[in-house]
Amino acid sequence: MFDSSEWAERGFCRKCGSHLFYRLKGTGEHQVPVGIFDDNEGLVFDHQVFIDEKPSFYRFANETHDMTGAEIFAKYGAPE
Image 1 (cartoon, rainbow, N blue to C red):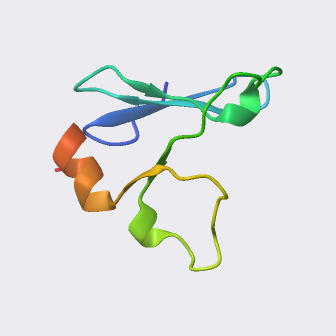
Image 2: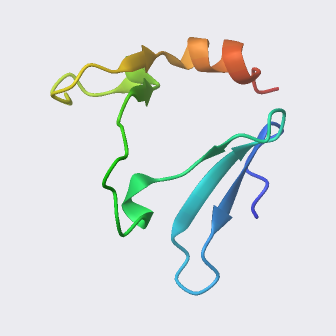
């Protein structure tokens, strides 16, 4: 694991270097890229984060729970 900040760390594949997960130290919650799963049947795309930093042309067809950077830091702890 790579200690990417005071409040989070990232895991990478030892063989190819691909990003595998993002872990919040305070809660132990993991964020995993959906692209690493062979079978994505049944997965639900229902959240977007740092929505305030996305390009204006970047849109998904379904409704999601959108969180700004400030909302993310308020929920999971602001970086120091």
